[in-house]
Length: 138
Image 1: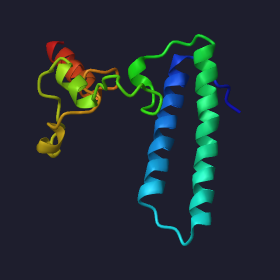
Image 2: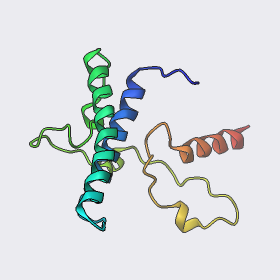
Image 3: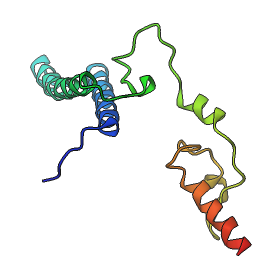
């Protein structure tokens, strides 16, 4: 069994899971069709119990002093008047890199679209491009 390291990354993951359960509950209540209201209530209760366990974990971790970014909070935790930083705004403010490396035979138009990870540590395209430039110099 894996040990869970309770740090800021784990708290961020818990916040993401809470946000996912919020979206699942909203979809369940607004769009799912059920045979009767008892089935809807049972499904809602099941998701709510899972979400509540995650909320308790997140509050405990935040109470223990684990740092977190306000933008990582689930939408249900944010104050109603707080400005929301959208992912598109963050991508626009991220530094633009040169054209990413595209392997031969790949669909180039699909590769030129903006990555949601542009400017983050998960931007594999910039690391491949940096590697190719370094390789060309050698």
